[in-house]
Every structure is written in C-alpha cells, then in structure tokens.
Amino acid sequence: MSFFDNWFAKKGDGDKLSRPILNKILETIRESAIVVGEDTRVVASNRAAYNAFGRRNGALDGKRLSEILRDLNLHEAFRRALSDKKSSDIELEIPLENCKYDVHIAPVEIDDQRSAVGIFYDITQIERLETMRQEFLSNISHELRTPLTSILAFVETLEDGALRDEENNARFLGVIRKNAERMHRLIDDILELSSIESGNVSLDVKPV
Amino acid sequence: MSFFDNWFAKKGDGDKLSRPILNKILETIRESAIVVGEDTRVVASNRAAYNAFGRRNGALDGKRLSEILRDLNLHEAFRRALSDKKSSDIELEIPLENCKYDVHIAPVEIDDQRSAVGIFYDITQIERLETMRQEFLSNISHELRTPLTSILAFVETLEDGALRDEENNARFLGVIRKNAERMHRLIDDILELSSIESGNVSLDVKPV
Image 1 (cartoon, chains in turn green, brown):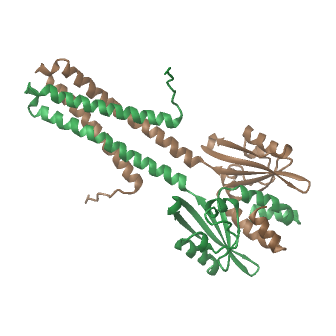
Image 2 (image 1 turned 90 degrees about the horizontal axis):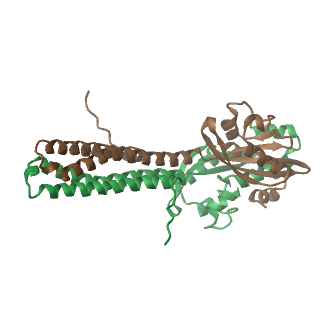
Image 3 (image 1 turned 45 degrees about the horizontal axis):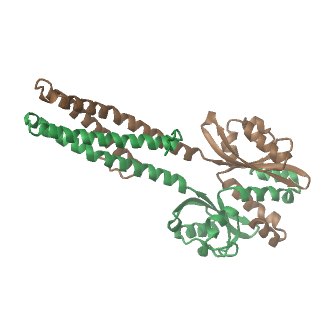
C-alpha cells in the first residue's frame, strides 16, 4: 500500500479532495507519463509527455502509441504490460531528437479494464556529459601526442650522435623547444577551459 | 485544464477508476513528491521521497517538514506557497548526503484547505559529472605541467651554451628524454581511461 493510498484511506471522501494535488504533481514532474488503453491508444498523459513527444505530433490523447513513438522495444513493452501484465524497463532512443530515456512500463488493471502506464525519465543530458568527457579526453590525448612524438624523435636523434653534429644539433634542439612550447600552450588551454567551466575565471578587461 | 482533468471529466466516475493509475505513476517516478498541510506536517509523499529522505528519519507522513529537511530556503518556499499562494523554484543541497535537488514548490487549495506540494528533481549525478570533468581536466593539466616545465628548462640550459659542454650535454638530454617518456605514459593513461569509460577496451588475458 502506498503512502498516497494511506492518505486516501484516511480521508474517506479523499478521492475528490486529492485530485488537485495529484494533478499538480503530474503537471510539475519532469518525467513524462503516458497511459495507454487496451487498444494502445493514449487515454491520458501529462504536460512533460506533451512537451517531449507532442510538439511534433500535436495533442497525444486519443492517438495510437505508434503515431507518437515508433520504437519496437517500446511497443513490445507496452504489449507485455497489456496482455501479460508484466512490467519492464527499457532504454528508448529517439535519434531524430538526439534524446534518450529510461522507460518503466507497468500494467494497471482497473476493475476489468486493462491499461498500461509508461514513465519516461530523460537521461539525455547525463549521457551527453559522459560522451563529451570521453571525446574530450580522447581529443586532447591525440593533440598532445603529436608534439610529444616529435620531441621524443629528436631527442633520440640527438642521443644517437647528432648531439656532436655542430651543424645540426642547435636546430634539432630548436624543434624540441618549439614542440614543448606548443604542448605548454595546449595544457594552458585545458586549464583555462576547466576554470571557465567551473566559473572561476576572471575577465581581463582592457581599453580598446 | 490538464490532460488528466480532461480524462477525469470524460470518465464521470473516473475518480475511483483513476486512482490505481495515479498511484502507479507516483510510485514509479524518480522525482520525490511531498505534500505538506497548513501546519507544515507531511500529509502525503511517494516512494521516491521516502527513499531520498526517509531512510534516515523513518516514515515521512505526519512528521513536520523541519524534522525531515533542515533547509531555510526550502521552508521559506513552503511558507510562501502556504500563506502567499506563490510557487517557487529553489536549489536544495543536502551536504551530509552530498545530494542536490531542483525543487519546485507550489500551493494547492482544496476547498478551503491549504496545502503545498514539493517536487524534488535530483541533479546530483549531473552536477557530479560536471565537477568530475573539471577536476579531472585541472588534475591532468597539472600532472603534465611538471615534466614539461622540466623539459623546457633543460632545453633552455642546452641552448644557453650547455650544448657544447661535452661533460653534461648528454646527461641533460637524458633528463629531457625521461620527462618526455613520463608525459607519454600520462597521455597513454588518459587515452586508456577514455576508452575504458566508453566501453571500447579489450582485456589482455594472459596465462598466470
């Protein structure tokens, strides 16, 4: 028995009383809620669902689920809830909108009427932050590698005898210095980027 | 008028019918929902709220909000909702648990009974990912800087004349090489880390 059930039980005529509160909650949550009847038509949905899936398709209520979301796994999960009364958790990707959701689909039976509820939790931002971090790491590693490879190669050349080659050793050393300076700038950029992102950057205002 | 209101209106006796669905939704969402009465005692809450705030304090219902969450801004926001009928959005930090929430607090009036609803959206993971990224960037920058500073210093020493000092130039070059190799390992580590995180790593299985 849920807390809300508890509350309803205590209230007696709480059904009517509680509706404004339940509505307020449903309209406030960021998770999308879609209720589907046995014919897989949407019987109810909240504002988050409309904002996520309705802008492209208009009002959701009365539409078939397949008109709103074309995802086989999602339909299979709703079917399982409606005919087998089984809950499932799936990951839904909407490639066109670059969005990702964790979706929980559960059966709900009311008297003899079967329906299923889908709750969509948006994980787009979390996934995007993870991907950004990985891509960034991979990019800076490759950026840093190029000058470093050059440094190592010229150090080796010098160690292999060029150190005593007075016509070239200063030039080779110059190449090492230039590449080390390039790495220095790259690392400064990374540091600056991390302070900009953490908001710890102070602007250097100068007269134009 | 919300979608759910619409649905209720169509159903007629929908109040009773809809309760299982509403309960299912409230118990499934990850956002915490807490309803507070005029005396700031909790009259209803969902499972997410219990998981987030109840484990330390036990059941939430009947408790004063101040027994569950000690945050001045939060209490002020609930007060505004209860006495001034004003909604607000605040950021709530729970330092002990290292958690952060975006909270929307709204007044709800049922007949003459005033109450307020708080919806807590957990932003801990998103904030943590952001912080991790910044700290990581700052750490690797500092890690890379130490050997690079050494490289640049010894290149300068060689360019300032030590290149012709046959007793020391090979040793100085050796220091440059060692530091460049150290940087190489650091960059390899960064790359490996980014592939582990993206799941693109293959394990090197060897007989023991």
